[in-house]
Length: 121
Image (cartoon, one colour):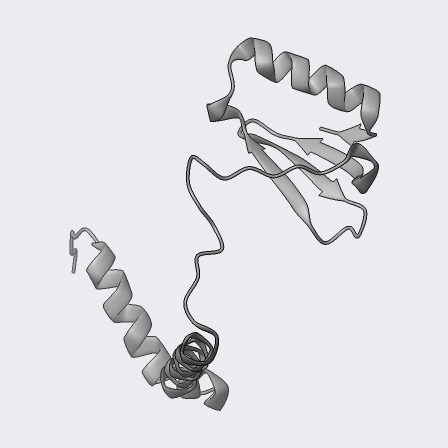
């Protein structure tokens, strides 16, 4: 027998749902209930925090600015899409997307980072 077909995204999602539902591994089968329960618990936590502390935005748009001294940075990385600059605690980093920069700005930033911080490509 020869069958020709194309798999759509919905076909794939349905197959994943069926595979999870019938998995021989109990933990995989339980994810259908456990993950939504975590989501609901997170929603309750956020709602409770909002009720107790009030609502505030942590991120703003074009008017947002941040100033960090160069002594707080320890390493810089670069790829095709962005510059990644790690702060001293090594868990916080700042992203500078290249799409926001001109070719000249990219070159200047690359040279500045090379002078100020060790970098890897």
